[in-house]
Length: 260
Image (cartoon, rainbow, N blue to C red; front, side, top):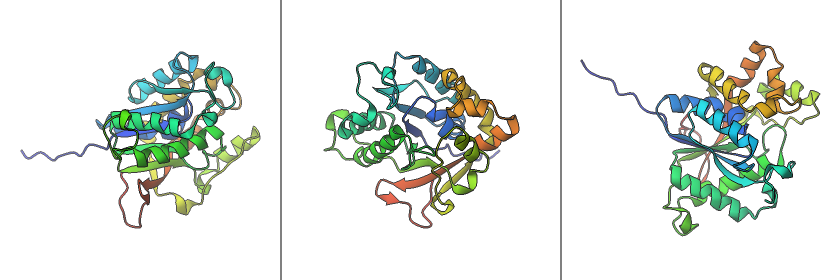
């Protein structure tokens, strides 16, 4: 009997600002790739490794199959007690943040890196925007041997996928965010290079989001908003993930393939 080879999905490293961003933005993609046998991992820029949210993050990553927490340990822009005695992420020299991300890229050696879009997602959180900037620079630097030589042997990811929200996807989520006074910074649909149906992994994604219990219990954060929704509406919101994709040398050219 002849066997048909099944290609393994590419390895992933997600670089996000806060615990819960990994589950909300790319949880379905992480779960999908882990289920296919790919190595997946997550770098989180803020919150201390000994904080309560680190424990929630560890549980979410276990659910998604994304390894152990990799926390840079900077303080959340709006919550100084997230990392006592440490500067806020946006106050840390950018070069220092980039080097920290490069170190994890070279250790994990992913084919694809995931992060926030340039807006910092719908609400434009300063930490999201800074994480986007630092990750763009880190992906370009990771493959260059003379940049950050103490951060490990060079490794060049093939592509960077920036999680985003097209205008057409805000029918459910937009009004919910606006109702609690948050912005909705979506992008034109034509800027979205990749749309992933992660509905087979939506239950797993929701379990990971729910693991961030301290955010679920609050009214304004997105996990809390999603918790209060009917199940069918919540499923519509979390079952699709959108990305703007670039290579280390710029956006994809027309016709250039982008791995899912």
